[in-house]
Length: 226
Image: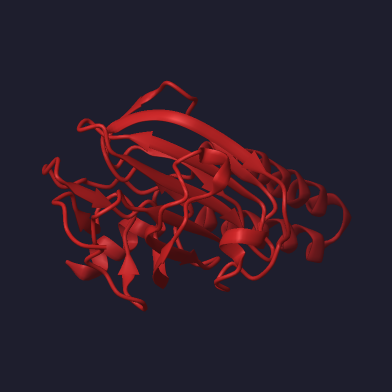
């Protein structure tokens, strides 16, 4: 059973964002057929890498409406209190932030942590530091989303570029109604995704844990002490 699930993950169809790269690799391989064998194999290897990197497996979100889910695959590199990005205008109060680092081996499709409405999206240019560093949350290029939950509380999800990640894609717009576990974007080639919980909500995860985007429960939406 574990082998079957692993194969399903590896052989999942690619995200649409990978199509230009797959086409480019295929063209390179085709040219290599007429020019040189090494160029052909370079194209083949590139296509296989892109199929793996852009894989987009189906995920099943828990049916409970009172949880927040991981917005990305990867491992937790930080669980700490922090102020949400200023551009989202969520106030200067601290709240819990869970930072997830995505290596080139992780699925890079971002997923919504909860049902709600996107109230604000803000893109900010910045540096391309190693996304596993804590200061990457403040200094790296990022795309931040504020999401209002059904009970009126707000959360923030931030897509952060990494050392070799130079392209952040966001497929939702301000005013969109979103569902927990739904795809909303992708970051290319190593990155980080931060989730800011509502004020008074504590995380259930710890540094070093592995996350599955759209499935792993990060917090329950019951009020508590910060």
